[in-house]
Image (cartoon, rainbow, N blue to C red; front, side, top):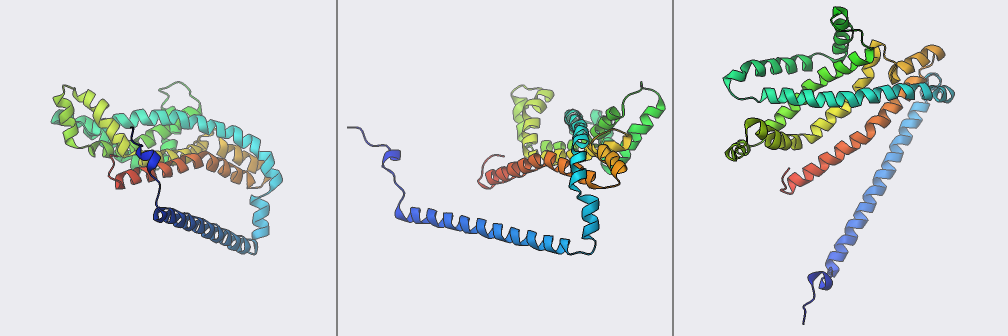
Length: 288
């Protein structure tokens, strides 16, 4: 005679059912309290804002519905340029940042010049604001007349790659150095070369350790691609600026800001979710 399986016979006890019901009630109560407190806070902010002396002028200058509708089309067309620059720059930053991180982690005195060069690069471009890098690359390099004439969007993309690769390189280097040395030793004992050890063992584990930091850098880069407008690129910010010049109203800037929020919000939520999941696995004793 076959014995019944555990799944077929096990039933939660009355105590377990009461605990589950208690947790559901606590969760529901917490959600309701959070919802009510949020509505109250938003209501207080709205009441205080609307009753300020200059609210009428601010509403006309920043929140004009008619001008907002007129500016949606041009600003969205400019946003497509920002998205294109973001995608290309993300690939360039990933390649250059990985190369710099690998150079920073090379062992042996023979590689000292490469380590020093990579360290000088990351130190310099992490210390220089992105805006200044855009000026130096967008106006300085073309003035040398070494390269053929290129559009401003090209130099803007190069400047974003140069600047953010320094940040990403340091994040990757921290992740690679967090990999235990025994992993390298085990890989080399199996006959893997140094390059194979980096590619198959160290870099994958290092990237996994710093995924939240890398995603935060990507979110930051999503915003900073709007700075390429200073080079004359007709992106979302520049399109909004042109609309402001035509209407003498700042509502197009608000429209551009909302577009950038819509662009960044999914990645922000994804970053928070990944961070929470990794923290939960680490606290549970899992391998991160």
